[in-house]
Length: 290
Image (cartoon, rainbow, N blue to C red; front, top):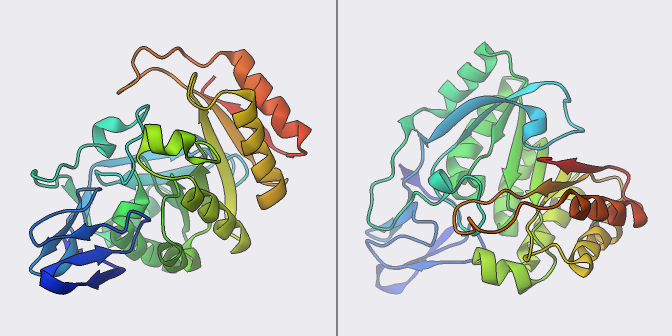
């Protein structure tokens, strides 16, 4: 547990969290939407600090990053929790494990120990992934600083639902990022994820403007974001508002969590998405999970 970053103390012992666009106002003894940040006597704490729920060594292409340190492995870890509730979440068992009335659990691993393990495994990078690093930003940032000192690269896999202040805190230590893009408007984000689109679009543009190596991934879910007009808007956004050199991964959906009866994404749909990307001049379009 550690005092949280980026929060404001309010009247009556309440606090306002500034890490993500929810800007949760949290009463004493309560937690925010992510259920890992708790107000204790007017101080906001990150309860998940130092509590790793998943640790693994992955091919960097799994993030997915196809154009950053290709062929290498990334030491990867996460805590429980997320600030979104995407109904198709592939990692729901850990991303949705944090609850307002339950203890935060995980293996006690310090930032320094993560760096030691990454070096011992001869991984050139550490990836903050699996759930949502935005909600374990304090833990991630302390690890990132030590990793940078040790000569390791730092990678984030994120849904991008963050404030500019959070991004500005991590960017000096961030080398590469893959951001999920689920759509370009609120049609998908509000109904299926519990968020809004604009903060994600802003995050993508902010990372690109800061010079962080950026790749974008879209899980193409039948009946959710697979219409030609939706895919076209995403391709157009990347090409016209970010950069044609930015890789776009269009990934296949498999049924799970709250969408067990939704069909697997047809290959034809993924091929059409890839063709749209190329139509708008994207230089690197990858079909994934196929």
